[in-house]
Amino acid sequence: MMARPTRTRRDFLRWAGLGAAAYAFGLGPSVAQPPGRRPNVIVILTDDQGSIDINCFGATDLHTPNLDALAARGTRFTQFYSGAPICSPSRAALLTGRCPQRAELPTNAHGDTGMPGRQMTIAEMLRAAGYRTGIFGKWHLGEADDQTPLAQGFDEFFGHKLGCIDNYSHFFYWSGPNRHDLWRDNQEIWEEGAYFPGLVVREAHRFLEENRDTPFFMYLPFNVPHYPMQGEAEYRAQYAGTEEPRKAYAAFVSTLDEKIGDVIRKVDALGLRENTLIIVMSDNGHSVEERANFGGGRTGPYRGHKFTLWEGGIRLPCIASWPGIVPEGEVRGQMVASMDWLPTIAHYCGVAAPDRLLDGRSIAEVIASADAASPHESLCWQSDKQWAVREGDWKLVVNGPASIQDGSEIPAQEVFLSNLADNPGESNNLAAEKPEIVERLTRIHENWAIDVQRQ
Image 1 (tube, rainbow, N blue to C red):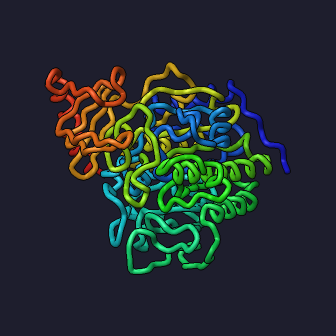
Image 2 (tube, rainbow, N blue to C red):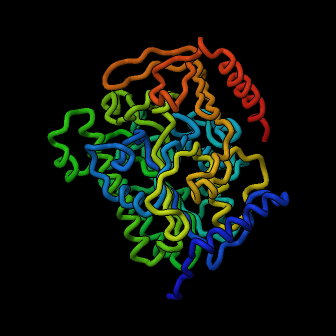
Image 3 (cartoon, rainbow, N blue to C red):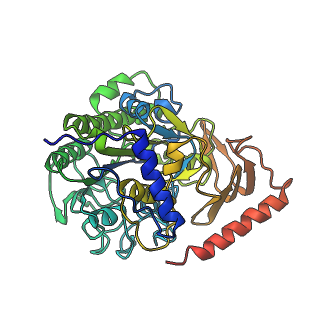
């Protein structure tokens, strides 16, 4: 196999400079071509993984050696935000570079509800540049003909279309009637008894082998540690002395870590690591639903969990690794978001981002330097009746729901203002003391709510 070019820090800085020049001269998203073959991109999305539920993010009781090793060979982000506190909108934001409202999917996909085919995804952007594209795992962005993976830029799909499945029977897990949900492309298939996370790894290995000589984009939305909690025997035994609900959740997180490690080891074995950008992140905070044993995930100092716009619902683990390009063993504390990955990937791959309004911004400069400014003056979220705004260290949550922390309920709050630099746990409400800040952040939300209706 032809030797792959080695990128140096100087290459990266020259390339970043070209990208900045493209923006400066009004050329839109970076179209600077990287040296040598375009890089491969692997995006791994975990499902309902809590804010600190990787050892390198603060867990002290989990076995996550593969994710910790990835962070050691890359950069991890400590103020990384999802686009939503629930599954489908967060996935829409990641894949389109747009907040869920502009991506036209502000709630979970079900029935006829899904992300319209007129939206443009990372897969469509990269396939137009000659990339082979594949998704293996959980889709959950719609079932209509124009909403399926093959209609949204993917050459291949293996996985389930709905929100969650039993990992052995592959039947829809939430409610009846009985519904089988395992697909290859647009064809229903059956693999009774085969462990679904293992099937994702199998398909990822095949895709890597078949596309080792061409640029590829592989999206791996694992359905782990989303319920049903079905960790493998090795890890159930490892956590036998741990109390529930942490016990089942921890076994599933370690199973996830092993499967991600299996994929990364294959990338290494094929000699692709030096030319591959690997990104791992969670879609939203951990679940406290009955089906998730009422919890199991942890948020450390942060309040909230899945379904809430408190920090624990949207402030999540994220790691990026690309030897020679992404700094190794470093941490970035700037405010960044999942929707930033589309323009960042465009920048790194030297391709044009979709010619439409994007809410994400390239974080290439943030990755290159801990001293770079966040590309966002503010971030906004809305999920049903609750909404939130973050500007600098200030965060306003309106109609914030009750949440569970350490087994105790924290009451709902109608208007809650916090300074995250002083109070990352959102426990001290400054709304009454700082009405001018509440008013300013409210105006930001109102203007944003109007703007995101534009396409």
